[in-house]
Image (cartoon, rainbow, N blue to C red; front, side, top):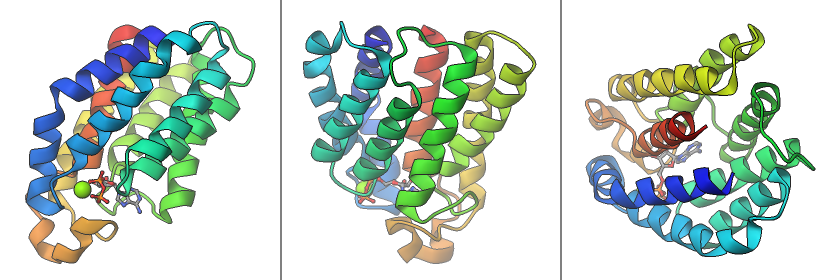
Length: 201
Ligand code: ADP
Ligand code: MG
């Protein structure tokens, strides 16, 4: 788990400017900066988390993100990781079935915290399709990595689709129709996280 989180922190750092550029277009240009700050803090905590179970690790990641990311995405991603942690309580290994529950809990947490749903041009428009693609594979008995690869592809497609919808949640919603033609930065960071998961599972 810690290896995946380390890769996630690294890739967020690599894509920091790109995410910030996307947020410049329809938000306030801080998404990459926010996430890089948060995942930087997560990375610093990884050595002390190494020996813990997956549930505890994810819970700490969530709390760290809530307290360091700032912006709308901090509490949203923070809640997602905390809910995923609660679903993985006591687990030492992640398999397709346990990740299914964690993924579902994470999305539920974002919807609850954000009072949002799919179709509003947010991270949920990458995560929702990704979850369905994941669930289809996991429920067919395919391994975690295969299911995550399907999720990562669906997230990319979901991300692309966000350019065709009008934002009704978050800062981008202030732009109304002017948000058309731009992809959502949170959907981009979600797609990136799923890509890292698929590549490192
Ligand atoms: P802020 O908008 O406060 O500057 P960020 O730039 O870090 O925060 O994050 C913006 C992203 O957060 C958006 O691109 C969107 O995906 C996501 N977001 C904002 N509000 C919501 C919400 N209510 N539900 C789900 N996602 C949201
Ligand atoms: Mg922003």
